[in-house]
Each structure stands twice: as C-alpha cells, then as structure tokens.
Amino acid sequence: MTALVRPTHGRMIGGVCAALARRFGTSATTMRVIFLLSCLLPGPQFLVYLALWILLPSEDKAHTAW
Image (tube, rainbow, N blue to C red; front, side):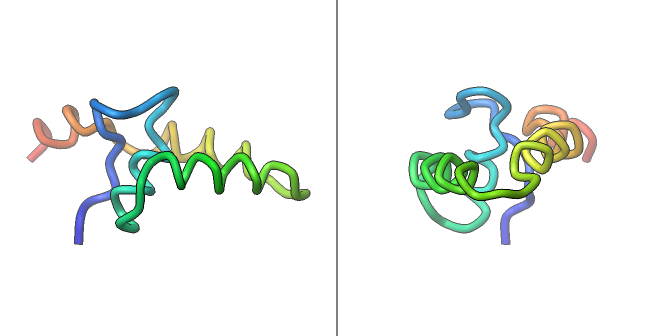
C-alpha cells in the first residue's frame, strides 16, 4: 500500500488527483475527469480538494521527514 502524498512530478495544480490516482491504481487523467464530473453534483468537492491540498504532504517533504 502506497502512502498518500502529493507527487512532485505529474501534477497539474496541487497534485491531489495525482496522489489519489497513485493510491487507487488508476491514471491521473481518470481521477481528474472523475473530479470534474463530480463537481457537477451538489456537494463540497472543491472544499475537499482544498483540504487535501493543505493536509497531504508533498512527496519531497514526506521523504525528508522519515
């Protein structure tokens, strides 16, 4: 099981979709499309994205912490 960290390579804005894609074994593009489609539904998707952007450590910072 991989740790949930935002990758330094392959991210577009914050790396949240790339991190989730890596964690669930799918492509980052697929995760981005799922996120964009979910924004069409009512709910706090954008706030969850922002929270994950703040809470998830960046890959380079996570490796130096260990």
